[in-house]
Image 1: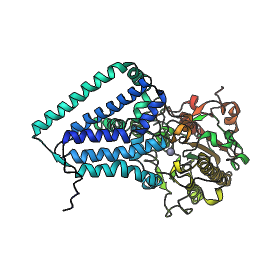
Image 2: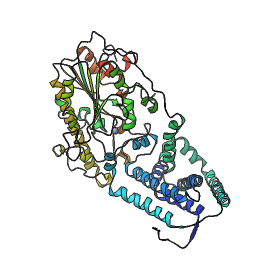
Image 3: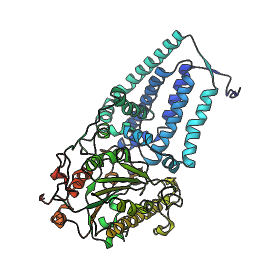
Image 4: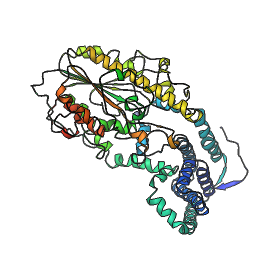
Length: 538
Ligand SMILES: [Zn+2]
């Protein structure tokens, strides 16, 4: 049988191995934690001692956790698991400034292989190798000495007790720092590795364990299109990905990133805000009747959303997806994936968003009755491999960052790649409008575009998205949103739009605005949230 070489002839007790692992993870996989703490507590002798004391808390909390899980048979796999987990978490926190909370775990669970592939690079490999694999190798190969179960238990108990005492004695003089750490600087604890990941995983799993299946709730059961509405509506909702408002020239960005949209009669919403900072949370929220403040993902997933209400009212609903999935939103309506060349005719290094339009006219022609609502879920600006999000022809801003290892690029290169991807979205939206124009004689046509969330591009060392809402920078929350109306659309609805479009709006407005576009009568419609409600005066 394969046997690992023994690294040293010394024999270790299980308690020693637990402490060594905790010290290693604290020292090497908690860089993000300590650098964030150091930013809040400027360097001084007292703060230096506080930082060291936090290191002690980190070690103690890990010793406590591992002591609960480690027994004769489990000690090696448990420690290996936490070493690997911490190396991964450490990488994403150090490199991208993200934190692993329950929403992020939800995103990870719902990710697909292409998204994972986007994240793989040498730097990640070296993190995992040096902070995960090599120390795991040591854990697996060290000689371990086990006492009887009872003695092990006593020694473990002693270990936890002693560390508590030591910690208490050393932290008491620092109570002022601890008070502010716990009360005023709550976000710092998000960077505690692997403690916060374990907490988040528990928070993610707990509701499912407590109540595995929420009963499904139907809403808007009375939804109906009035008989007086004889015109057919064709609405295409484009769910953008990872586009931030301040990189749209329509919103005043110094670069021309919307050359094609600028030629159309666009209604731009410069003050539009996302419901959350990640796809898995934003998508269900965008299509839910719940507003951001009320939003509960589990409840939303087991309640009818906008698509369900539309489809009950008789609207033909279709979701086409070139991103990871609809995150459960389109589970009960027609859904087509465009991630593979089998369905998407426009694929080079990856399948392009415009491919979703290829057979769309055919779909529209086949529906000889009723209104049509089509959602196109873009790959858009999904990071960190922005350079893959556009064909060569859109490589207008150069030099670009042609790697997913963001630290290997200058911020200028990174932004160039990101902006080229925005340019490609501009083209995609212009193609959507082109398709709608072809249908203007048979339909009242509308395009509604809104991004799911924004993106950090290295401001204060933060990249990507997914930070908890209240600490996330505006770059992750302020999103581009535009509407386009065909010439036969109801002009009464656009009466007050010039003043309304400038007000603060958000994903909360999507549900009732779309119901309003189809003139649907239902108790779940809220005219106050309908951006186009002609009665609403600001
Ligand atoms: Zn997203």
